[in-house]
Image (cartoon, rainbow, N blue to C red; front, top):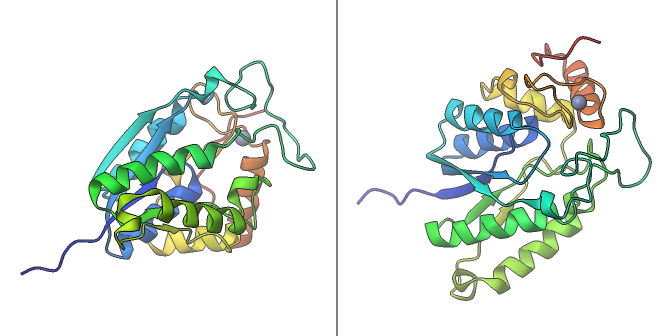
Amino acid sequence: MSQKVKKAVVLVSGGLDSATVLAIAKQAGYQCFALSFDYGQRHRSELEAAAKVAEHLGANSHRTFVLDLAQFGGSALTDSSIEVPKHHEEGIPITYVPARNTVFLSIALAWAEVLGAYDIFIGVNAIDYSGYPDCRPEYIEAYQRMATLATKTGIEGHRIQISTPLLHLSKAEIIQRGVSLGLDYGLTLSCYDPSEQGLACGQCDSCRLRQEGFVEAGVNDPTKYVSH
Ligand code: ZN
């Protein structure tokens, strides 16, 4: 009898963090089921990046779930009438998408239960991040408790673990980890406001964190930026 394969649902956005998480889950021996969301975000290019990343890292399958949060808007990422800020803002920025990780994790939880996967990987980070409430350790802990209570598999003794391998890493540490796993960050797109061609703006909060991370990590930044 061969050993049973461990399955994981991995949230893959097309950005640097979630690509690293997928590389980590693969290296840990999981059969990875990559999950992306077409949620009404400003640009298609991040979904194209997600598909490339899932293929590059050998995900078992890749699903793009359509769930149009732009129907509600309320964020610079889902409402084209709200500009993406090109400087760092204090407090929770307008790029926060209301309840996004709760919505995404809930879909991931449903898929995991169907697949018989006992792990969900998500690339939340509480060090070099934009200050979103649903990226904090206390949020993940609360979600974990809810997930165990909410599922048949949880009640029957197979709790679905929410894994957050990047939670306490700096952006530079995340990049070093990914490079050591052979990840090509040139495939990823982190920008909140890329051009139609998928070039990063180089000015938004996400671009800023990413640029600083490559510098601090001492790794050449493969990101393609628009020229200003
Ligand atoms: Zn940007």
